[in-house]
Image 1 (cartoon, rainbow, N blue to C red):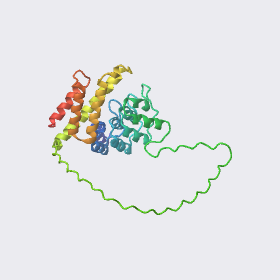
Image 2 (image 1 turned 90 degrees about the horizontal axis):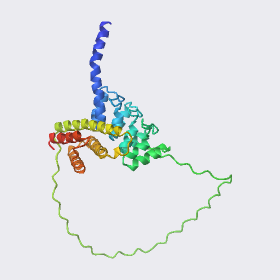
Image 3 (image 1 turned 60 degrees about the horizontal axis):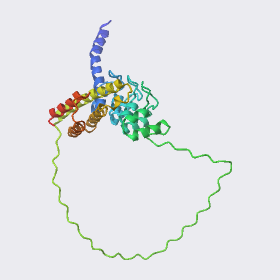
Image 4 (image 1 turned 180 degrees about the vertical axis):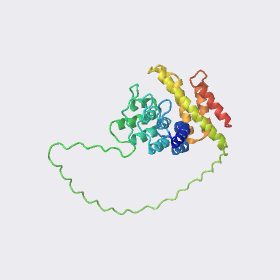
Length: 309
């Protein structure tokens, strides 16, 4: 090997770990809905079709958590819309299962195949029943049966005319009668009582977001925690092996509530909103300690406290 060949090999050996890190960052940013980080990773060379250890692509992560804007960016930069992961899920399947109506409509409108099936034999329409949003099931039903979604609805053909006789011509319309001028009655003045002014409510003190650095660190940590919760929920459902009684475990809706929290943080970038949502989840689930998500529950609490909330 010549000097140029050795130099090229050295450059490649140095670049490969950096590229692998960029690909990992792209998956994490897509899962968290971090649009600016997704854009930066792609511009620095990350592949929109990279796969993580679950075989999942960035577009599948974005669709799973309802980040339609990230899905749009990845598609515009070469992401394969029907890529499947290790369980046979496509981006459309994940969006349907998690009940993200906007993302499902977007993917359907851009040609995602609704006929793929997971290795358990379920398609996107069947998976939508887990998502608790009837609009998702409805839009997939129409899409599977040939109606366009996300653009102009498919025109329905009229029933053909029976027989060979031509339709009878319509009679000419009669001219409308001329309007008769009516005398306009004079309005009678009515005394209207002036309502008493309502008391001005006292201003409500709004909770402040943490400073920029603390907020950025907390949102990044929450995105990482979201990835762990996603894996935990996937493993739990996979362990249930289609057993309906196992899927009635309270951890399934608890996991979905946590994933919704992570998705909302990615959309709104608001830690105050995340804190309020977290309080609602903690009250609803009574701070479950014996849970598959016990560590995740602790993680969110610590992350928000570290950010000063």
